[in-house]
Image (cartoon, rainbow, N blue to C red; front, top):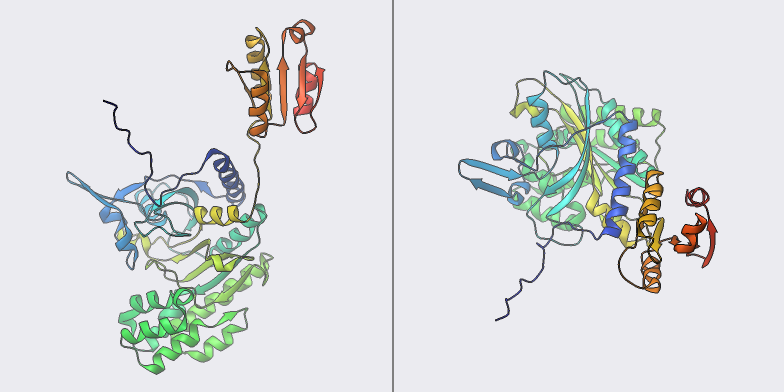
Length: 431
């Protein structure tokens, strides 16, 4: 009786790319790492799983519902839902040996058990850069995180605009309305403004028990966006000390960004930017592709002055930026037909020349050329067809005549021409 085969399938919403796309993705990561290194960030890799008491210390909001949690014996653990809380744990564990400000970047997979849909996966790549201070941290670092978006996307040849706000401004306004105890619920509702629109937000705020005047003030607030001119409008809206402190900090950051050479094409202020994580305490921002804002934010971040307070009594304020690499890659792939060269030269043996071919492949590889041998027992025509299918630019043919002449025939697949050359001449061409 024939054994029943298992249907090959993967979990829905989990990340997997075919090799030709994985090469493009890794190329993007290399360009991003170049920028992080120029800004003097150090690499870090933390475990994919953390103890639940660590990861759940200060998540809150919808995130708690999406966390993958596991119990194995006496161990209660979760898959990380972002890279920031593991960073806070790492810094708290190593605070006596780190140099501050501590600047690190990390690129890795994170997990959220939400319903898979366009732009949202259960497993996806996060790309983070954070700056942690010892006791205090200048707002210059908030500005640097915003600048990272410009520098990274410039290196990727993609126009981006970062939209900036402050949780202090929002908290001050909600406190002024006498609703400080509902800050978390109100902020979650306002954070959905782009998704559910003004009417949806009004309905949500009504369900929280806010009156018409309070709701209108919050709606007017989240509609404020633009350049530095919105600060005067904001200050006329509320006189709460925390609110005014948040506006003053945004003004300071605006000055630093201009000193960095950024302008209105690179960033703007938008008070509807709130961010869903409860650990943010000050500046918050989100990044959008300038030509496709409707696709949603492809990155975000902000300041968290007390995140590590759950793990240490030492004050370790931080600010960080993040890029949702999986979402960004999907958007780019929908708008490009970029092809990547996997192999510069395929080497094909003719007759009993396999060892010579292996020697030549090694020569090319040792000199930095991507090369491989087609050693299977197939016809020459089928091997050329395979090379063409893979997009190989050059094919090196070594037969018995080539061995006698101590030369190699090089075929240029783009123009279907060939010539017999020395291996050094071929190397010069391939380089």
